Length: 402
Image 1 (cartoon, rainbow, N blue to C red):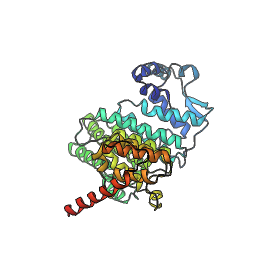
Image 2 (spheres, rainbow, N blue to C red; image 1 turned 180 degrees about the vertical axis):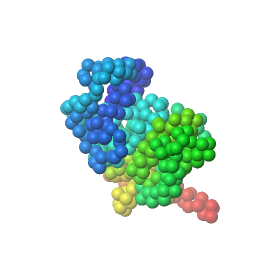
Image 3 (cartoon, helix red, strand yellow; image 1 turned 90 degrees about the vertical axis):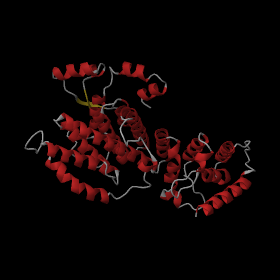
Image 4 (cartoon, rainbow, N blue to C red; image 1 turned 45 degrees about the vertical axis):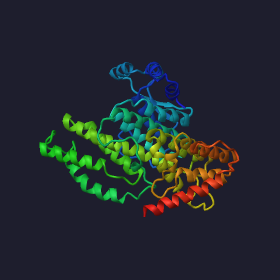
Protein backbone atom coordinates (compact mmCIF):
# COMPACT_ATOMS: atom_id res chain seq x y z
CA UNK A 1 0.00 0.00 0.00
CA UNK A 2 1.45 3.36 -1.01
CA UNK A 3 2.01 6.12 1.54
CA UNK A 4 -0.69 8.38 0.13
CA UNK A 5 -3.31 5.65 0.55
CA UNK A 6 -2.29 5.11 4.16
CA UNK A 7 -2.57 8.84 4.92
CA UNK A 8 -5.93 9.07 3.18
CA UNK A 9 -7.38 6.26 5.24
CA UNK A 10 -5.96 7.81 8.38
CA UNK A 11 -7.81 11.07 7.68
CA UNK A 12 -4.56 12.97 7.15
CA UNK A 13 -4.60 13.08 3.37
CA UNK A 14 -4.50 16.87 3.16
CA UNK A 15 -1.45 17.07 5.42
CA UNK A 16 0.20 14.14 3.67
CA UNK A 17 -0.38 15.65 0.24
CA UNK A 18 1.22 18.89 1.43
CA UNK A 19 4.25 17.10 2.87
CA UNK A 20 4.66 14.74 -0.08
CA UNK A 21 4.11 17.33 -2.81
CA UNK A 22 7.82 18.10 -2.71
CA UNK A 23 8.62 14.47 -3.49
CA UNK A 24 6.12 13.37 -6.11
CA UNK A 25 4.07 14.90 -8.89
CA UNK A 26 1.59 13.28 -11.25
CA UNK A 27 3.69 14.14 -14.32
CA UNK A 28 6.82 12.57 -12.84
CA UNK A 29 4.83 9.50 -11.80
CA UNK A 30 3.42 9.16 -15.33
CA UNK A 31 6.86 9.42 -16.95
CA UNK A 32 8.37 6.90 -14.54
CA UNK A 33 5.44 4.52 -15.02
CA UNK A 34 5.64 4.72 -18.82
CA UNK A 35 9.37 4.09 -18.88
CA UNK A 36 9.35 1.13 -16.50
CA UNK A 37 6.34 -0.31 -18.38
CA UNK A 38 8.14 0.04 -21.72
CA UNK A 39 5.72 2.49 -23.34
CA UNK A 40 7.05 4.67 -26.12
CA UNK A 41 6.88 8.42 -25.57
CA UNK A 42 4.28 8.95 -28.32
CA UNK A 43 2.19 5.97 -27.11
CA UNK A 44 1.27 5.16 -30.70
CA UNK A 45 1.29 1.45 -29.92
CA UNK A 46 0.67 -0.55 -26.78
CA UNK A 47 3.17 -3.27 -25.83
CA UNK A 48 1.86 -6.74 -26.57
CA UNK A 49 2.79 -7.84 -23.05
CA UNK A 50 3.33 -5.84 -19.90
CA UNK A 51 6.78 -6.65 -18.55
CA UNK A 52 8.28 -4.29 -15.99
CA UNK A 53 11.73 -3.08 -17.03
CA UNK A 54 14.77 -2.71 -14.79
CA UNK A 55 15.22 0.99 -15.62
CA UNK A 56 13.00 4.07 -15.34
CA UNK A 57 13.31 7.58 -16.76
CA UNK A 58 13.94 9.93 -13.84
CA UNK A 59 15.63 13.19 -12.91
CA UNK A 60 19.07 12.97 -11.29
CA UNK A 61 18.99 12.01 -7.61
CA UNK A 62 19.27 15.51 -6.15
CA UNK A 63 16.28 16.78 -8.17
CA UNK A 64 14.14 13.82 -7.13
CA UNK A 65 14.48 14.84 -3.49
CA UNK A 66 12.77 18.20 -4.20
CA UNK A 67 10.61 17.44 -7.20
CA UNK A 68 7.92 20.05 -6.72
CA UNK A 69 6.35 21.86 -9.66
CA UNK A 70 8.81 24.76 -9.22
CA UNK A 71 11.78 22.40 -9.10
CA UNK A 72 10.56 20.65 -12.23
CA UNK A 73 10.19 24.00 -14.01
CA UNK A 74 13.72 24.94 -12.92
CA UNK A 75 15.13 21.63 -14.15
CA UNK A 76 13.38 22.00 -17.51
CA UNK A 77 14.47 25.65 -17.89
CA UNK A 78 18.10 24.84 -17.16
CA UNK A 79 18.18 21.89 -19.53
CA UNK A 80 18.26 19.10 -16.95
CA UNK A 81 17.00 15.95 -18.64
CA UNK A 82 15.42 12.85 -17.21
CA UNK A 83 17.65 9.86 -17.87
CA UNK A 84 17.28 6.12 -17.43
CA UNK A 85 18.20 4.99 -13.91
CA UNK A 86 18.38 1.39 -12.63
CA UNK A 87 15.42 0.16 -10.59
CA UNK A 88 16.28 -2.41 -7.93
CA UNK A 89 12.76 -3.80 -7.54
CA UNK A 90 10.75 -3.21 -10.75
CA UNK A 91 7.58 -4.85 -9.38
CA UNK A 92 7.62 -2.77 -6.19
CA UNK A 93 8.50 0.38 -8.14
CA UNK A 94 5.55 -0.28 -10.46
CA UNK A 95 3.20 -0.93 -7.51
CA UNK A 96 3.84 2.53 -6.09
CA UNK A 97 3.40 4.23 -9.47
CA UNK A 98 0.13 2.39 -10.11
CA UNK A 99 -1.29 3.75 -6.84
CA UNK A 100 0.12 7.24 -7.30
CA UNK A 101 -1.31 7.60 -10.81
CA UNK A 102 -4.77 7.69 -9.24
CA UNK A 103 -3.90 9.44 -5.98
CA UNK A 104 -2.05 12.32 -7.66
CA UNK A 105 -4.40 12.87 -10.62
CA UNK A 106 -6.49 15.31 -8.60
CA UNK A 107 -9.49 16.81 -10.37
CA UNK A 108 -7.69 17.48 -13.66
CA UNK A 109 -9.75 15.71 -16.34
CA UNK A 110 -6.83 14.98 -18.66
CA UNK A 111 -4.77 13.52 -15.82
CA UNK A 112 -7.74 11.43 -14.70
CA UNK A 113 -8.17 10.16 -18.26
CA UNK A 114 -4.47 9.41 -18.70
CA UNK A 115 -4.37 7.56 -15.38
CA UNK A 116 -7.49 5.57 -16.27
CA UNK A 117 -5.97 4.46 -19.57
CA UNK A 118 -2.83 3.19 -17.85
CA UNK A 119 -4.70 1.42 -15.05
CA UNK A 120 -6.89 -0.35 -17.62
CA UNK A 121 -3.74 -1.57 -19.33
CA UNK A 122 -2.49 -3.02 -16.03
CA UNK A 123 -5.81 -4.80 -15.41
CA UNK A 124 -5.85 -6.17 -18.96
CA UNK A 125 -2.19 -7.15 -19.42
CA UNK A 126 -0.36 -7.46 -16.08
CA UNK A 127 -0.03 -11.08 -14.89
CA UNK A 128 0.47 -9.94 -11.27
CA UNK A 129 -2.78 -10.14 -9.25
CA UNK A 130 -1.37 -7.60 -6.77
CA UNK A 131 -0.79 -5.02 -9.50
CA UNK A 132 -4.29 -5.64 -10.86
CA UNK A 133 -5.71 -5.15 -7.36
CA UNK A 134 -3.88 -1.83 -7.02
CA UNK A 135 -5.16 -0.79 -10.45
CA UNK A 136 -8.76 -1.67 -9.52
CA UNK A 137 -8.45 0.33 -6.30
CA UNK A 138 -7.01 3.21 -8.32
CA UNK A 139 -10.01 3.17 -10.66
CA UNK A 140 -12.21 3.44 -7.59
CA UNK A 141 -10.28 6.52 -6.43
CA UNK A 142 -10.71 8.12 -9.87
CA UNK A 143 -14.46 7.38 -9.94
CA UNK A 144 -14.83 8.89 -6.47
CA UNK A 145 -13.16 12.00 -7.86
CA UNK A 146 -15.78 12.04 -10.62
CA UNK A 147 -18.54 11.80 -8.04
CA UNK A 148 -17.32 15.08 -6.54
CA UNK A 149 -16.15 16.75 -9.76
CA UNK A 150 -19.24 16.10 -11.91
CA UNK A 151 -22.01 15.64 -9.36
CA UNK A 152 -24.16 18.18 -11.20
CA UNK A 153 -23.75 16.64 -14.66
CA UNK A 154 -27.17 15.52 -15.89
CA UNK A 155 -27.46 11.81 -16.55
CA UNK A 156 -24.06 10.95 -15.07
CA UNK A 157 -24.01 8.42 -12.25
CA UNK A 158 -20.94 7.00 -10.62
CA UNK A 159 -21.90 3.32 -10.89
CA UNK A 160 -25.40 1.93 -11.39
CA UNK A 161 -26.69 -1.58 -12.20
CA UNK A 162 -27.13 -0.59 -15.85
CA UNK A 163 -23.38 0.04 -16.16
CA UNK A 164 -22.40 -3.56 -15.38
CA UNK A 165 -22.81 -6.29 -17.98
CA UNK A 166 -22.51 -9.96 -17.15
CA UNK A 167 -19.62 -10.70 -19.49
CA UNK A 168 -17.26 -9.30 -22.07
CA UNK A 169 -18.65 -8.92 -25.60
CA UNK A 170 -16.89 -9.40 -28.92
CA UNK A 171 -17.11 -5.67 -29.64
CA UNK A 172 -18.66 -6.12 -33.08
CA UNK A 173 -21.57 -3.72 -32.50
CA UNK A 174 -19.17 -1.06 -31.24
CA UNK A 175 -16.91 -1.51 -34.29
CA UNK A 176 -19.84 -1.12 -36.69
CA UNK A 177 -21.10 2.06 -35.01
CA UNK A 178 -17.59 3.51 -34.64
CA UNK A 179 -16.86 3.02 -38.35
CA UNK A 180 -19.71 5.38 -39.19
CA UNK A 181 -18.51 8.04 -36.74
CA UNK A 182 -14.74 7.94 -37.26
CA UNK A 183 -14.75 9.48 -40.78
CA UNK A 184 -16.59 12.53 -39.40
CA UNK A 185 -14.08 12.79 -36.56
CA UNK A 186 -11.01 12.27 -38.75
CA UNK A 187 -12.16 14.90 -41.26
CA UNK A 188 -12.15 17.55 -38.52
CA UNK A 189 -9.00 16.35 -36.73
CA UNK A 190 -6.65 19.19 -35.85
CA UNK A 191 -3.77 17.86 -37.96
CA UNK A 192 -5.83 17.70 -41.18
CA UNK A 193 -8.05 20.78 -40.87
CA UNK A 194 -7.80 23.41 -43.55
CA UNK A 195 -9.21 25.98 -41.11
CA UNK A 196 -7.68 25.51 -37.66
CA UNK A 197 -10.84 26.67 -35.87
CA UNK A 198 -13.45 24.97 -38.11
CA UNK A 199 -16.67 26.63 -39.19
CA UNK A 200 -19.69 26.69 -36.93
CA UNK A 201 -21.31 23.74 -38.71
CA UNK A 202 -18.03 21.83 -38.74
CA UNK A 203 -17.55 22.31 -35.02
CA UNK A 204 -21.08 21.13 -34.29
CA UNK A 205 -20.73 18.00 -36.44
CA UNK A 206 -17.34 17.21 -34.90
CA UNK A 207 -18.66 17.64 -31.35
CA UNK A 208 -21.73 15.51 -32.05
CA UNK A 209 -19.65 12.71 -33.59
CA UNK A 210 -17.22 12.69 -30.66
CA UNK A 211 -20.10 12.68 -28.15
CA UNK A 212 -21.81 9.80 -29.94
CA UNK A 213 -18.56 7.81 -29.95
CA UNK A 214 -18.04 8.47 -26.23
CA UNK A 215 -21.49 7.06 -25.38
CA UNK A 216 -21.24 3.88 -27.46
CA UNK A 217 -21.19 0.61 -25.53
CA UNK A 218 -17.85 -1.11 -25.99
CA UNK A 219 -17.19 -4.83 -25.93
CA UNK A 220 -13.79 -5.06 -24.25
CA UNK A 221 -11.04 -3.14 -22.49
CA UNK A 222 -8.97 -2.67 -25.64
CA UNK A 223 -11.82 -0.75 -27.27
CA UNK A 224 -12.19 1.34 -24.11
CA UNK A 225 -8.49 2.23 -24.16
CA UNK A 226 -8.39 3.10 -27.85
CA UNK A 227 -11.46 5.33 -27.55
CA UNK A 228 -10.10 6.97 -24.44
CA UNK A 229 -6.78 7.79 -26.11
CA UNK A 230 -8.60 9.27 -29.11
CA UNK A 231 -10.75 11.55 -26.95
CA UNK A 232 -7.81 12.57 -24.77
CA UNK A 233 -5.95 13.77 -27.87
CA UNK A 234 -9.04 15.55 -29.20
CA UNK A 235 -9.44 17.52 -25.97
CA UNK A 236 -5.73 18.19 -25.42
CA UNK A 237 -5.02 19.64 -28.87
CA UNK A 238 -8.30 21.46 -29.60
CA UNK A 239 -7.40 25.20 -29.89
CA UNK A 240 -10.98 26.56 -29.87
CA UNK A 241 -11.92 26.85 -26.19
CA UNK A 242 -15.74 26.46 -26.45
CA UNK A 243 -15.30 23.35 -28.60
CA UNK A 244 -12.66 21.99 -26.22
CA UNK A 245 -15.12 22.32 -23.34
CA UNK A 246 -17.76 20.37 -25.26
CA UNK A 247 -15.26 17.65 -26.09
CA UNK A 248 -14.25 17.53 -22.43
CA UNK A 249 -17.88 16.81 -21.54
CA UNK A 250 -17.79 13.80 -23.87
CA UNK A 251 -14.48 12.70 -22.40
CA UNK A 252 -16.10 12.52 -18.95
CA UNK A 253 -18.45 9.78 -20.17
CA UNK A 254 -15.63 7.88 -21.88
CA UNK A 255 -13.46 7.96 -18.76
CA UNK A 256 -16.32 6.80 -16.54
CA UNK A 257 -17.20 4.00 -18.96
CA UNK A 258 -13.58 2.84 -19.12
CA UNK A 259 -13.12 2.87 -15.34
CA UNK A 260 -16.36 0.97 -14.66
CA UNK A 261 -15.49 -1.51 -17.43
CA UNK A 262 -12.13 -2.13 -15.75
CA UNK A 263 -13.81 -2.83 -12.43
CA UNK A 264 -16.33 -5.15 -14.10
CA UNK A 265 -13.46 -7.08 -15.69
CA UNK A 266 -11.84 -7.34 -12.25
CA UNK A 267 -15.10 -8.70 -10.83
CA UNK A 268 -14.94 -11.50 -13.43
CA UNK A 269 -11.26 -12.31 -12.84
CA UNK A 270 -10.15 -15.78 -11.80
CA UNK A 271 -8.18 -14.37 -8.86
CA UNK A 272 -10.37 -14.24 -5.75
CA UNK A 273 -8.47 -11.39 -4.09
CA UNK A 274 -8.99 -9.23 -7.17
CA UNK A 275 -12.71 -10.06 -7.28
CA UNK A 276 -12.90 -9.13 -3.61
CA UNK A 277 -11.15 -5.79 -4.25
CA UNK A 278 -13.50 -5.03 -7.15
CA UNK A 279 -16.52 -6.01 -5.04
CA UNK A 280 -15.43 -3.66 -2.25
CA UNK A 281 -14.74 -0.79 -4.65
CA UNK A 282 -17.99 -1.16 -6.60
CA UNK A 283 -20.05 -1.54 -3.42
CA UNK A 284 -18.63 1.70 -2.06
CA UNK A 285 -19.28 3.50 -5.35
CA UNK A 286 -22.74 2.12 -6.11
CA UNK A 287 -24.14 1.75 -2.61
CA UNK A 288 -26.52 -0.97 -1.38
CA UNK A 289 -28.69 -0.78 -4.52
CA UNK A 290 -25.85 -2.28 -6.56
CA UNK A 291 -25.47 -5.40 -4.40
CA UNK A 292 -28.07 -7.63 -6.18
CA UNK A 293 -26.35 -6.87 -9.50
CA UNK A 294 -22.91 -7.66 -8.09
CA UNK A 295 -24.19 -10.97 -6.69
CA UNK A 296 -25.67 -11.85 -10.07
CA UNK A 297 -22.40 -11.10 -11.90
CA UNK A 298 -20.30 -13.13 -9.47
CA UNK A 299 -22.62 -16.13 -9.68
CA UNK A 300 -22.99 -16.00 -13.48
CA UNK A 301 -19.28 -16.71 -14.02
CA UNK A 302 -18.68 -19.99 -15.92
CA UNK A 303 -16.60 -21.33 -13.03
CA UNK A 304 -19.60 -20.98 -10.71
CA UNK A 305 -22.21 -22.24 -13.18
CA UNK A 306 -20.16 -25.39 -13.77
CA UNK A 307 -20.58 -26.38 -10.10
CA UNK A 308 -24.07 -27.85 -9.78
CA UNK A 309 -23.78 -28.60 -6.05
CA UNK A 310 -22.66 -25.16 -4.81
CA UNK A 311 -23.84 -21.99 -6.56
CA UNK A 312 -21.73 -19.39 -4.75
CA UNK A 313 -18.37 -17.82 -5.55
CA UNK A 314 -15.60 -20.38 -4.88
CA UNK A 315 -13.44 -17.91 -2.96
CA UNK A 316 -14.33 -17.81 0.77
CA UNK A 317 -13.07 -14.22 1.03
CA UNK A 318 -15.57 -13.10 -1.61
CA UNK A 319 -18.41 -15.01 0.06
CA UNK A 320 -17.51 -13.49 3.43
CA UNK A 321 -17.45 -9.98 1.94
CA UNK A 322 -20.91 -10.52 0.40
CA UNK A 323 -22.31 -11.69 3.74
CA UNK A 324 -21.01 -8.57 5.46
CA UNK A 325 -22.46 -6.37 2.71
CA UNK A 326 -25.92 -7.93 3.16
CA UNK A 327 -25.58 -7.81 6.93
CA UNK A 328 -25.03 -4.05 6.74
CA UNK A 329 -28.23 -3.70 4.68
CA UNK A 330 -31.78 -4.71 5.53
CA UNK A 331 -34.38 -7.37 4.79
CA UNK A 332 -35.77 -5.47 1.80
CA UNK A 333 -32.33 -5.48 0.17
CA UNK A 334 -31.94 -9.20 0.86
CA UNK A 335 -35.30 -9.83 -0.87
CA UNK A 336 -34.18 -8.14 -4.09
CA UNK A 337 -32.78 -9.94 -7.09
CA UNK A 338 -31.47 -8.60 -10.39
CA UNK A 339 -32.74 -10.26 -13.56
CA UNK A 340 -32.40 -14.02 -13.23
CA UNK A 341 -29.97 -13.72 -10.37
CA UNK A 342 -30.64 -14.92 -6.85
CA UNK A 343 -31.79 -12.85 -3.92
CA UNK A 344 -29.62 -12.18 -0.91
CA UNK A 345 -31.78 -14.51 1.17
CA UNK A 346 -31.17 -17.36 -1.28
CA UNK A 347 -27.44 -16.71 -1.17
CA UNK A 348 -27.32 -16.54 2.63
CA UNK A 349 -29.46 -19.65 2.99
CA UNK A 350 -27.14 -21.72 0.81
CA UNK A 351 -24.12 -20.55 2.79
CA UNK A 352 -25.80 -21.29 6.13
CA UNK A 353 -26.89 -24.69 4.86
CA UNK A 354 -23.90 -26.01 2.92
CA UNK A 355 -20.86 -23.73 2.86
CA UNK A 356 -17.66 -25.85 3.08
CA UNK A 357 -16.35 -23.59 5.87
CA UNK A 358 -17.98 -23.80 9.29
CA UNK A 359 -17.17 -20.18 10.11
CA UNK A 360 -19.05 -19.01 7.02
CA UNK A 361 -22.05 -21.21 7.81
CA UNK A 362 -22.24 -19.60 11.26
CA UNK A 363 -21.69 -16.10 9.84
CA UNK A 364 -24.46 -16.56 7.25
CA UNK A 365 -26.84 -17.92 9.91
CA UNK A 366 -26.14 -14.91 12.13
CA UNK A 367 -26.71 -12.54 9.20
CA UNK A 368 -30.05 -14.19 8.43
CA UNK A 369 -31.11 -13.94 12.07
CA UNK A 370 -30.20 -10.26 12.24
CA UNK A 371 -31.99 -9.42 8.96
CA UNK A 372 -35.13 -11.25 10.09
CA UNK A 373 -35.10 -9.85 13.62
CA UNK A 374 -34.53 -13.23 15.24
CA UNK A 375 -32.24 -14.24 18.08
CA UNK A 376 -28.87 -15.46 16.82
CA UNK A 377 -28.42 -19.24 16.82
CA UNK A 378 -25.00 -20.53 15.68
CA UNK A 379 -26.53 -23.90 14.78
CA UNK A 380 -29.30 -22.32 12.69
CA UNK A 381 -31.87 -24.94 13.68
CA UNK A 382 -34.69 -22.58 12.76
CA UNK A 383 -33.45 -22.01 9.19
CA UNK A 384 -35.03 -25.06 7.39
CA UNK A 385 -38.52 -24.21 8.64
CA UNK A 386 -38.07 -20.52 7.79
CA UNK A 387 -36.71 -21.38 4.34
CA UNK A 388 -39.72 -23.54 3.47
CA UNK A 389 -42.09 -20.78 4.59
CA UNK A 390 -40.07 -18.18 2.67
CA UNK A 391 -40.19 -20.20 -0.58
CA UNK A 392 -43.94 -20.75 -0.28
CA UNK A 393 -44.46 -17.01 0.18
CA UNK A 394 -42.33 -16.23 -2.89
CA UNK A 395 -44.28 -18.77 -4.98
CA UNK A 396 -47.56 -17.24 -3.84
CA UNK A 397 -46.40 -13.76 -4.79
CA UNK A 398 -45.28 -15.02 -8.21
CA UNK A 399 -48.66 -16.64 -8.88
CA UNK A 400 -50.52 -13.49 -7.88
CA UNK A 401 -48.35 -11.46 -10.24
CA UNK A 402 -49.28 -13.56 -13.28
